[in-house]
Length: 409
Ligand code: ASP
Image (cartoon, rainbow, N blue to C red; front, side, top):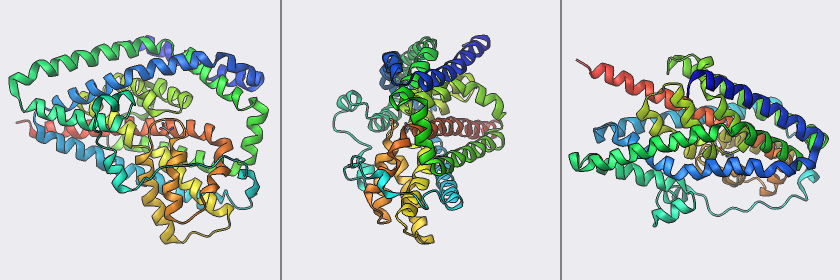
């Protein structure tokens, strides 16, 4: 996409977000009549995800040439995901201790909320979720993690085949380019989709007055989450500047469409096509972005991890339970796991939070206290999730480039 088109789209997206907010605020539930336009946009994005993830990961890994480099790129990516997620949870813990959002909250606020149910999510379940007995069924159900694992193994196998593997790699390269072309086309519909998603969601939540009342009820909690997310976003900008050696401002400009889409859809997976396009426009190393972004959209969720830490401490404070330093360290580890286990879909973090609550022995019904405002905070944390993935691609890209320079004669 050319720079002038990028600028036009950016302005249109900004106008759409503001207009969607204003329409939803004043028109309330009536705006649900435009919800179908948002669904159309979201469905069009989702339609691209499986072929795009497959083509992107296969060409990203095969492009490394030597399978041994996969280990290094994977190592950089995992180290980045682990460090930034732990940072995010630490910021969440800090904010919750600082703001004490749950102190004095009435427990009756969540009494009528439906119970949150979740299957088993332990370490064995996380590991088992990496494989699927039927890759076609995984694709049909949009289970991205087993698809990514399969594609990494498939690409590694292809790159050991030499000339015989070439036509298959060329095929997936073409598929990837064609999918990215479709992303560019769909992007032109993004402002209408974003407008409809925001207006209809705010409308469904009862319009402006109801939203303000929800915010006021859980104001301190929302402030703790949002100030934590902003702090983490600043930290990511610092990583961009010093580790990836990029201007944070420039990078944010390229990523703006994806970030606004993340805010409107509350889904990092649905946003992935636009994240790939934004990082491409920012000129991040091709192999890094093709591999790091699909994996990041599925497992790297800084915003979710941070939010889980604040939410769990909020629940403890509301129930008048004091969590010791040791228990807060347990929150650090389990919130990291819960964020990895959360799918890139709306309100997934609310469900995987059960892991953290169970680990520190807090009542699961506490989740009911957070439900009223979760639809909004989900959007904020998804935006940070997507930004964290994109910064990861830039950092890993820079490390790979540094290696190539060092290896050059
Ligand atoms: N909605 C988030 C995402 O897609 C996950 C969450 O619920 O925190 O990234």
